[in-house]
Amino acid sequence: MAQPSNTFDSYDAVGIREDLSDIIYDVSPEQTPFYSKCKKVKATNALHEWQTDALRAAAANAHIEGDEITANARTATSRLGNYSQIFVDAVSVPDTDSSLKKAGRASEIAYQMLKTAKEQKLDIEKALFDNNARVAGNSTTARELAGLPSWLITNTVFGANEGADATGDGTDARTDETTTLIAFSQARFDTVMQSIWEEGGDPDTVYLSAFQMNKALAFTGMNNQRATIGASVGGTNAVVNAVDVYVTPWGTVNFMPSRQNRSRDVFIVQDDMFSCAVLRNTKNMELAKTGDSTRRAIVTELTLVSNNEKASGGIFDNTTS
Image (cartoon, rainbow, N blue to C red; front, side, top):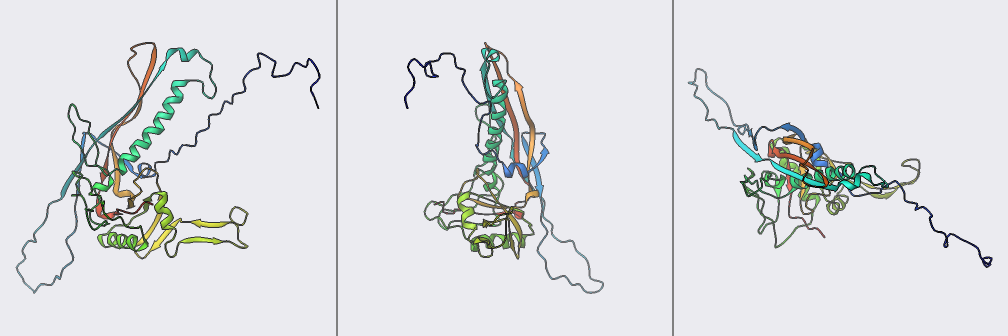
């Protein structure tokens, strides 16, 4: 078949309008499970402080009749603190943009600010998981919060060479193992779960990377991969390879894959023992106009509070490949 002579087709035409969809597709992950689960409390100072305490160990307690009673030795509470970290992201859009007709959004500044807010939440999640010591800051140094690894010291397993717990008060970071990393295993996991139980903790959630999640799928008793014959999921036969909860003698926990914690770290957390102390709630603020553009910023200031680290634990220095 050939086109008839002098046919004026779409390739010759001038003025055909573009066909650009008004939908912008973005599949970038934006989940922040740990930050979302942390209770938000009010901070009134850049250094937010709290106290922890513990009961003495059980001991034999028997006295004779009429015995003289003397006071037992008592210990003071522990005073801990973490510095608030300021998270800032800004957008500048030329004022010409407000007169342009665009696809997928009516306002460029509004669209960019929405993206920025999501990106900042990811930054906060990463900071909460970072192996980072607190920094008091000064006129030339930004304050930094101490992340989760720097608080966990009671219920931990880690590498036997350089690996070491931090002090546990946020003033220093963990020492990472560099010589020999250890594969994440059910035995290491159960060791930490038992230790948490012995300390009185009741953990809820396990935060781990996709790589370590695949290791967890091999735990004995998990829903290991199997063909479901005659059963159905959503009305169809299915292959099940998932972990909802892991039931141990020391408690039941949910496995929550997280994209922002380091793959070498696996955290077992009692959710109500961690919170975020917020000095300044997230705010979309207008910046001073200094030229022919509109400038706005997203600002949040908060810190991580480890209410009592004995209720949680960590499996550290895991292999990541």
